[in-house]
Length: 144
Image 1: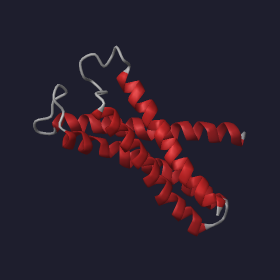
Image 2: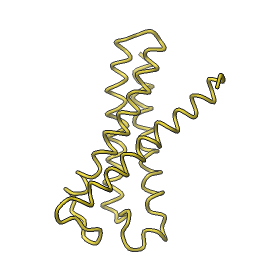
Image 3: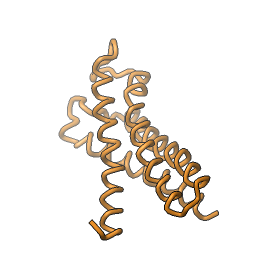
Image 4: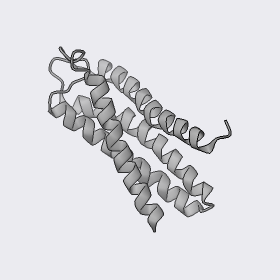
């Protein structure tokens, strides 16, 4: 694929949704093995522990993408600064949105969740939060 616009668009989708989807699957499996975890009465600590793979996986994927921009600009210091700052901002924003949605009763897998398309809503809003958080930090760093 030689078109940079199409390649970049596809890599962004793969990075954002792929990293978070893998994190979500790992987090769901992790939640299932935590002692005392239930869908009917979820504990905030269990939710936080299960959200960490999505936070780390999605944030790392965003950080690797941001690092590539710095490398493309031939600035190693910028690349590493983008890597950790954008990754943390994107992952933190995704985690915050998910915890807020959880507190508001949008629990993936809970009774009635399928009717509200809870998983799609939570993932979609989390991705928007990650894009805004990571993109904002990247824009701020690149503007300097």
